[in-house]
Image (tube, rainbow, N blue to C red):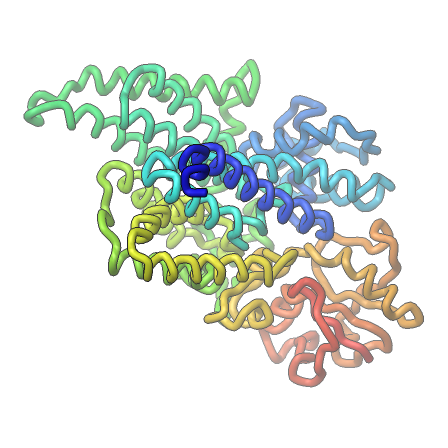
Amino acid sequence: MRHFIAKNKKWIINAVVCIIIAMHFILAFTSAWVKSPTIDEYTYISTGYLYVKTGEFRLDRTHPPLIRLLIGLPLQLLDIKQPALRMDEWDDPISYELGYVIGSDMLLLQRNNIQQILIFSRLPVMLLSCLLAWLLFYWGRELYGASGGLVVLFLYCFSPNILAHARLATLDLGASFFIVLALFSVYLYIKSPNLLRLCISGIALGAALLAKATALILLPIYFVALIWVLVRSIKSIYDFPVVECVKRITLLFFCVLITLFLAYGYPFKPFYYLDTLSNVFTKSLSSGKGGAMIPGMPHRHYAFYLLGNYSTDGWPYYYLVAMAVKTPLAVFVSLGIFLAFGRRRWRGATDALIIGTIVILHTLAVFNRVNIGLRHILPFYPLMFLYLGRVADLNHKRIWAVVLSALAIWYAASCVSIYPDFLSYFNLAAGGPDNGHELLDDSNIDWGQDLGRLASIKEEYPGEDLYIAHQWLFLPTPFGFDARLLKKEQILSPPKGIVAVSKHWAIRHRISQRSPDYFDWLDRYEPIGEVGHSLWLFRF
């Protein structure tokens, strides 16, 4: 047996890689099948579909177009009944809102096959996630050998936070893929610099910038990498080749510009991208008080939520707390074990890329006032998993092999136990998903993803009226059941029947006890159950 394994080691490893990635895809696909549209999918599906169909990027320029183009491509294969496009309004600053309007019309009002549209639009993101899984394995194998690559792959493919977004037609997972791809490209350039690899790095950077503005964190990383490649080959700082440095930076950004040209078309419309950047900076640095004037902010006087507290200004430590309560504990334990007992904790330029990007991402997150979701720092996870691949070095001792195997089982159990409700995952130290509403809201727990599953609740209680308390875009009819929207005055006097309460809605209605629509049902009544860890069920 040992001889067989040694002789066929390469094929066995490749088979294991394929199996793990296939399991990742199956987890994403099957959980996506039972999830209704999240709020942001309405605009990304509609704008992606229209970007491809019309070639116009004017509608909703709050984010770059690349991921939306990928989302919209397979939708061209479907016979979709189009709503009114209102193209004369696409240049309006509030066309951000129009994307949601057109999307809700397309998915909920036009009698389109909503399940078909959702799967076709989500499929490109699932495939990008599988590509990212393979890329992480390949890079991990480069750094730590096959066993280290498998560790990285395992951590990524069974991460609840990755799976939560790997099955949605949104931007965060796709942006993570292109950011890691750009970092890997510049890693190859540092390893063996030549003009071809420099050009490839520029194209990868351009693609990342086209995916999401988060990729701007790569600019200082690229600049330092280019300088380092030149510095390490000279004996004195006075020998630094300034002219050569300028040439390489010029070539790099020429490749970036060419990539932007290809995406935006000719003639190039640079102001579209400048509009995007302007919105991103304004939104990120603004508080909830000014939300009405900024596309992408929920609304004026929006109070962000953290650990049971509300603030229109947000918290500088919001994303660190979100990461702490939503990351499986096995990851923290593994990291602690390696830092305490591992060797080669720092590996030069490679770690400068990985850890440098993580540090910049979290530093900028401190200034991001839009505290609505861990997804804004989602690229942190593949980079952290890439760093953790080195725990495979501990396997040379039997005791660590046993400990790491136990941690792997614990980690996989964290994934399986929350399936298919990955978005609502919280670790055991945080109290698990049942306690998530005490800590975070919005896309951390309830993004409208389980409203369609209320059809089964209606079947379970066929003779009773069903009411829904939510503030998402949703109609029950396309999902095959009838329900009424709970009115604010019914909070004080609940109607007879089944009431499904969105956890995000409940948090939004607990800001002030003086409010006439203050939600206090958890103090007065006991829920009869939950749906997807994002909806409470009450029976009156």
